[in-house]
Image (cartoon, rainbow, N blue to C red; front, side, top):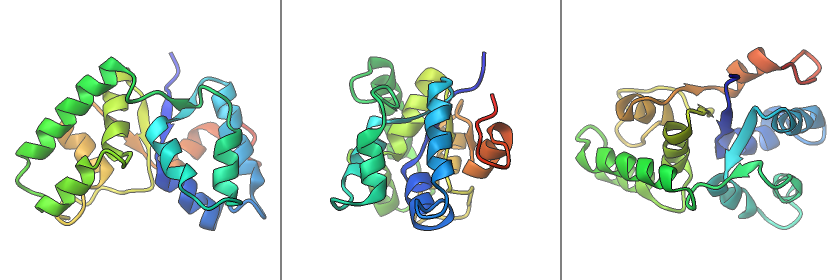
Length: 174
C-alpha cells in the first residue's frame, strides 16, 4: 500500500508567499491536485479552515475553495481521530519540557497541528510540514518533535515529498 500524506497549513502559506507562488509556479498546485487524484496527497479540515481565513481574493483561499470534496479530510467528525486527539492532549497536559503558552497554542482547537498529528496517528498518514525538529525549543511545539514524543507518527518536509513524488517539471510521479 502506498503512503498517504496530509499537508500542514504552513506548506501552503509558505508555498503561496515564496517558493510556489501562483505567479510563477502554478505547477506545484497542480501537482498537489494530481497527488490527490492519485489517492496519495490530502490535508485536513482544520487546515482548510485556516486557509479560508485568508482575505477574499487571496490565491491560496481561492485554491482551497476550488479543491474537490475529499481533499480536506474530516478530522473533528472522525471518532478515531478524536480518540487520538485526546491522546495528543494528554501528552500536552503532561509534558514538562515546553512552556505553558507553547502547549496552550498547540492545544488551541482552531489550530491544525494537534489534529494533523491525531489524524496521522489514527490513519497511518505521514504529516508534511515545513517545521523542523528543534528538541531544545521550549517556546513552540514543533510538529516533528511532538510527533516523536506522542509516538507512531512520521513527518517529512515538502521537499522530501517532492523528491519522492515529483518529476523536475512538477508532473506527479506515482
